[in-house]
Image (cartoon, rainbow, N blue to C red; front, side):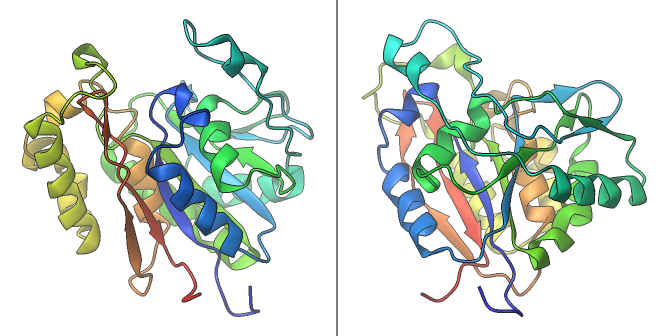
Length: 266
């Protein structure tokens, strides 16, 4: 990364925890992106699986554990580890940025990496050498606040911090079908609407997705898996080219579509 380059921003649909074992269409694309990165000092992840009450929490754990925060999956999943070090010093900078932006913010020196963080990183940066820390999503955070949270964190990109929002393009677990089931039309229609808004960088449309996107309530019965996308978009700039990462649709309804902004031409 040159002195003037910024670290990229990613939104990753992390899907089911089995994504760690079954890379599908998205895994190789993340691996290729990771191999192209140089000069990354740390990775900041905002995951749908760390929600906090009344405040944003910033992880300053020096050596975070790998949290297996799921049940009923193959035994092999529970043996996987992602032993990346933490990034306490850079996490302090994130804390300062968020507090200055008006977010009630505290530090957490004990939090580990949930599967929304380590599962996509298992493909993106498999060596687990680059420091990783997480920033939480407060319960009840609005779409506009998610965009503002991303905007507050955006300057960290200039210091080599790769920002990742980890959620899911669609996340209706009530309608899961067999792994090889055909895609439900509503999931495709919702993802297509979001892609159009992301490519146009229409912050206004994305902030109103609940009212404007087709099948929004069905695609996201609850909102926590969509909010990391808005954080990621908020961390981008007008000049950041966006790359669509086509991950297909798993279990008939889980769109794995993801995005990358600000990748180098290489």
